[in-house]
Image 1 (cartoon, rainbow, N blue to C red):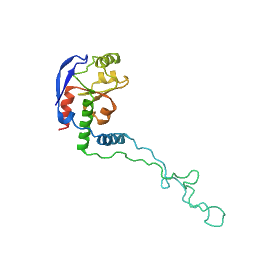
Image 2: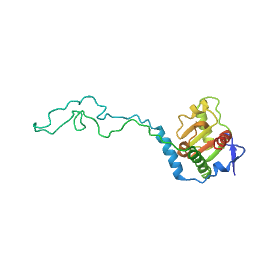
Image 3: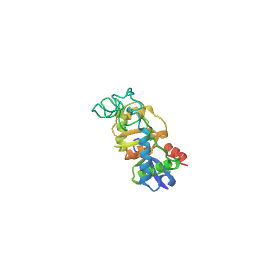
Image 4: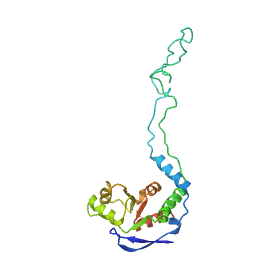
Length: 206
């Protein structure tokens, strides 16, 4: 079982925390992480694109000219894809891009993502990050004290002061624990957790 130090927002050591081995020391399999990330990105796609095919386009019900004797190529509709103003052949249609992944696979991928951050020594446990007001300059002072460059900060619950203070800081994302995802963990090289978040993850992945 790994033991990590707990820091204050000024990066002073305030204690230690034992991380459960079954969550933070899981062998990483890239194919499972890849699958879950693909599912995450696919679910975010709007899928609202759409073009008109022969069934949807207006007009074209009447045969433009008789079949034989005109010297022209035969034509059955003025809305043929070959004609100007005609339909589109095999064009994109509105669809849902998401696909199902088993809950056990999702849980395993989250454990692997957390384990990879611990193995790379890029996981930090911070007791609490609290700001008295919405002030980007104050958040930057905390960021510099903790040595964060590109980091995902996971907080126990929505903190409006912290979220708005960090919103315009490049490379930093503040996320409440209920929206924690494998994609976000892998997208940011540094991960900052609160002790309460670790407890919540442990309950979630039982």
